[in-house]
Length: 190
Image 1 (tube, rainbow, N blue to C red):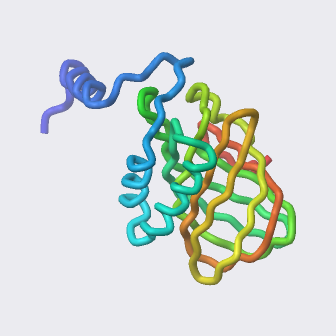
Image 2 (image 1 turned 180 degrees about the vertical axis):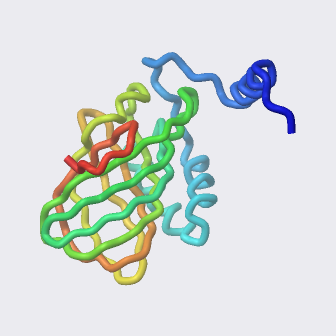
Image 3 (image 1 turned 90 degrees about the vertical axis):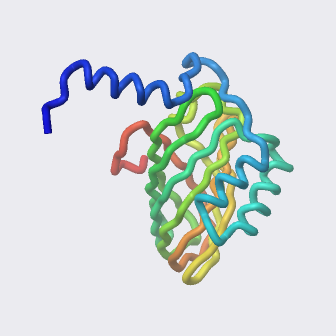
């Protein structure tokens, strides 16, 4: 195999960039997704849990309208009174490109157990892609043994994030906490 020349590298990069949607201006608001587009993406991501996903998306759409971004990823969490949650995934927008994101956060409440989840987060009222990188607070309740499906809502200013989780583990409780979104992975949940 011959070594790659600068010309070959340039042509490969050009082909890769041409296959991706053009990134919108940094300050441009991402376009909205329809309920069917979100459900179709969730069906591919969650697989057999389609009915619960469709009901969760329908409920969120009724309450907050059409999301202008969504995140697909995985996460793990554990708690005994105090807890932590860590996750990573990709945020998809219609006209502002895709972006790898990480989230982590503490919680406090009447909560015990551990779980690992596949997560779809619907993002509403996101003014710009960079606005995701902050803390979103909310209340979370979990009650499942072996596996479960859940929906919560987190808010910061006008931006609302609705995590829809399907996972395995044993968890029971109610807690108050936040998720902090970052562009790079970190172990610090605060």
